[in-house]
Length: 154
Image (cartoon, rainbow, N blue to C red):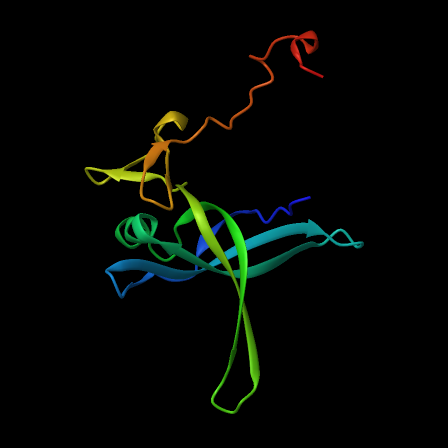
């Protein structure tokens, strides 16, 4: 049986994407992404926990990120985990776990003529790792407009 290595994150960029070009003019962008979880502890106090993830994007996605994303941008990233191992200058074995993004959806409000507006769900776009762009699926759910429970496939 094959394994599954999928990661889906919604979070904010910790800094602007760092874009570099490798041999063969291959673009690669890297940035930290913060995901924050909020819950109540046993005393009823709100507690926030932030996890930091290193995101790596390649080719068209890397260029898209460098062009449109900035520190604080809210994004949905889908990809896979990759762990790299190397020896540092003191011969210590080091590890780094990264999210290699295959799909990127920008969730920020856009600015048009200096005015904020939130585009409709069908105007969000996702871009795959080869730089191809397609409309992202509408992930919204409105129970007031759904059919009866007999319409469910299960």
